[in-house]
Length: 215
Image (cartoon, rainbow, N blue to C red; front, side):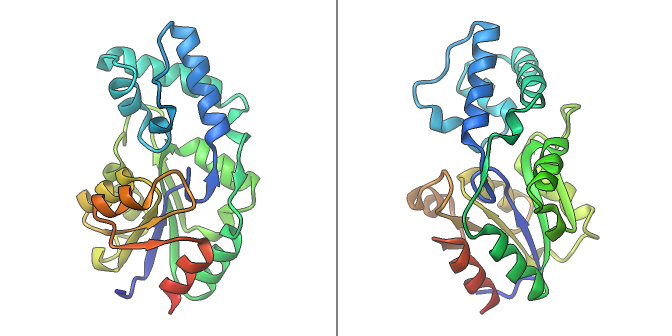
């Protein structure tokens, strides 16, 4: 494995299991706007909200933007804390930080929500920067979020940066931003999805991820 110095973590499906709160908000938004949920709701876990409302709900760009605002208003009232931290994640982050890695978060969740969640569950302490989508419609893609995070982490050399996430959009976003990606199997994606999308490394557990990166 290449020697990385800066590690960027996805949030949903990588650090936390946030599916219950996310699904509740999608259902609320669908009911509020009179639109139908997709049959396979698993597709909604991972991609940016605007992408999901356009692709999986069939909305045009203006309607999708409105749906995002309805979703976020409801999500911020409390659904964002309907989560659990994956077993082994705090220990993994502690080991990596103690080993000298600089850690950041690059999530397509709104940055303000990501910050609140990580503070609430005492994970913010591990990260040099927590970056996410803007509530003003900016940074809608994973690549844009990764670039935003790296700018706020003093623009480290891309060859020394590794994105860590559970879905193919993490891999594709990392590639577009000029960095490699480690796929993780304890989240929402599958080994097949991550392999086909071109993940440079794959870890089955948080402990294994730390072992691979440190050793």
